[in-house]
Length: 131
Image (cartoon, rainbow, N blue to C red; front, side):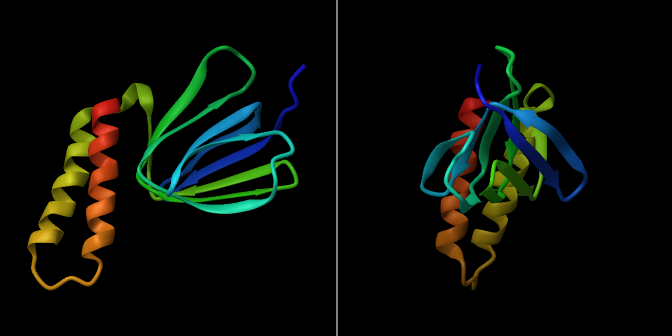
């Protein structure tokens, strides 16, 4: 039997999920990482991509996330997100709109976070391919 841990996912709009899970696959800033029971404590930024988890069934639940933060401590995982769209309800236009918004900011002229926006755009384009 696989050990479970508590997962809470909250977006700016609502509580997305709360319950016990066996694992969480997270799109971390420097690559995807898997959280299992008894994972070492950590805090990480989340890049745009797909966050997936399993409650013990063979079916994984997944959400497109636009970015956020994850905290893992004492078998409790808290995920705070800018936005989350259930994989089954996601349409490519949702991601395309985010890419367009970044393009507008990049073409606006004098911005200080051009590199960050470029990286975020790349992450969104990769997520668009997976959608």
